[in-house]
Length: 496
Image (cartoon, rainbow, N blue to C red):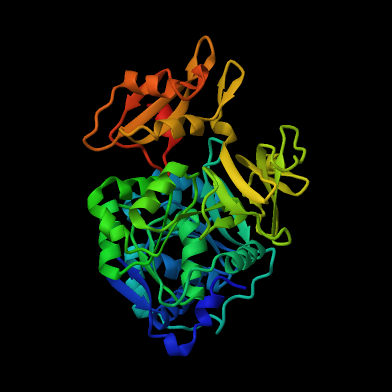
């Protein structure tokens, strides 16, 4: 099943239905118009020498054009390589050199691109796309999408991972098809009347692997924000009668922070969170304000997005990701430090096996050897599977704080801090210490109009945790640094 198959199997009787809307510009496109643009762009790609198997780099913000470009690349059997649009031109050089992309489609003007790119790679500015839609006609491309083989790499996404260099995740037609099967079996709350809001970046998979195909397969409408801003999200919910929203925990913290937003949030039918573990306090507050559950799921770009879903079920605590899926689709296990499978209920590293897995990291043989063990992919996430077959995420292995050999989870400390009435959100990290190796430091964002001192919070935490878990210092911040996905950037906090 090609990425484009769902789009080109749309019933002709709904071809004039709006498929996607750009919220920032209020521009809409119907299914018929979208298919026409995709075929036209596919013809353009062929005319400039792009063929099946070639890599095309997409350095684009969320929008209808990004969907057209990605779909057009897939239509002819070329490989879409997504690059975070926030990466500066000098940073794009790394991705072009690593992938040897034949074409870069970017929001940056050619004059602002380094010679290392323009001297070796064809460049298309996104402002040229409208002219292409007008100038080119559907000619030269097949009447149907490219017939992908299951092991063909069809797209590449970059993840920061645990190394200093970004890693290109190679996803195949098989991984995409298996993820689609998992989604259709375990994700049900979608119909043609539903209206979905997307502000998560396409370049990170949440939008382009999950939301775009989901909307197309179920003939729903997807409303697209270029990036997240709580006020813009609320305006979109009101203006377009949005029913479904998707995000990461920091998005929901921001939406809940202002009481003026609460009336709009109550109009929603579904809210879903992924990419980072939810605290039970946030879930409870969301339900108290909106009247609906804050659903959650678990997955990685290396597994072609989602693995488990907790939709429509009450959370059993912080980190509850839902029931493990049918192992014939995707299998979840837990490793100890020696890569042995653990029994249920025991905490270790979450590992995954199945058709959804990536083919590997591009040009990273040593890293591939490290993360794949006997067919299992080591996620770097810590958790356990309960006796009831429920997956619980407890943290990131690399985020564990090592205090004189005693391991402390930052999420446990954050959970206590977040219960204090003056705390809106907290982030806990390790800082170096000459005596203990590492100690706990916390960053705290206060609730509006509330006051609290560092001493008061330290005393509060000391009443709930063991002494070595109590932060040695607490720093108050107006906001947290976020990465392009909208997740709190702990690495950046460590450099402050």
